[in-house]
Image (cartoon, rainbow, N blue to C red; front, side, top):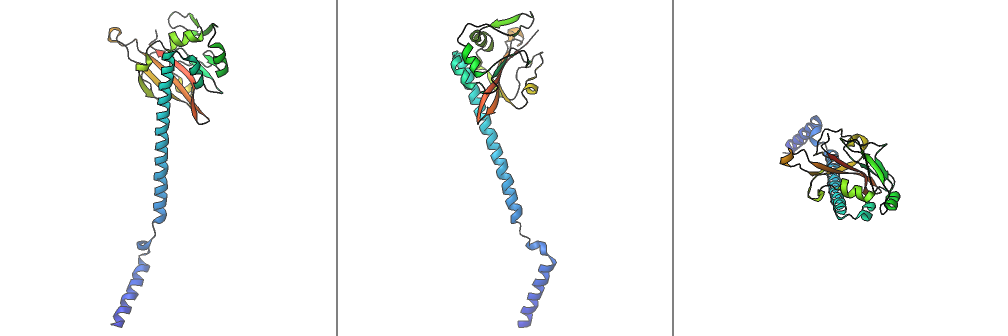
Length: 214
């Protein structure tokens, strides 16, 4: 009986020697997988939080424009880059009107006339005070009721849209008002807000209107 036990013990040792992988510790692989899964979860959570924050800010800014609370609007202007207003989808960094937060606060209550761009079709210069531009051009439709998208274009006209090229590191929202059947839906309008992060908060760097152009 003793000899039988010794024989079985020898066979077990030999078997372990021939099949070393059978007893490999997989703890390291498990730890790596857990870390990867955790990183992916954190990234997804960050993206979800970011999307929620941008949509909330979009809602706030649209409501501010509807209420014509332009003093409050200045709180959303980027502290370093200011905010640029583009009359149409094409962003012209040299000609589009750009205000620092300080200049916006300075001129917004005044009757100072600014040139904002060129009217499509007629080619006439569009001149107005800050208040009139925001009231009559930027918020020309009730965008509070618009369809909201994040980093996606809904309104697609025949003018060049270079938002992503001009603001490559920014996020944007679009508030879209669908056109009417009476006008073959060509009277649609969009209001886009371009945001960049600064010290843990998102600020406006661009306000872009878009519509069907001639």
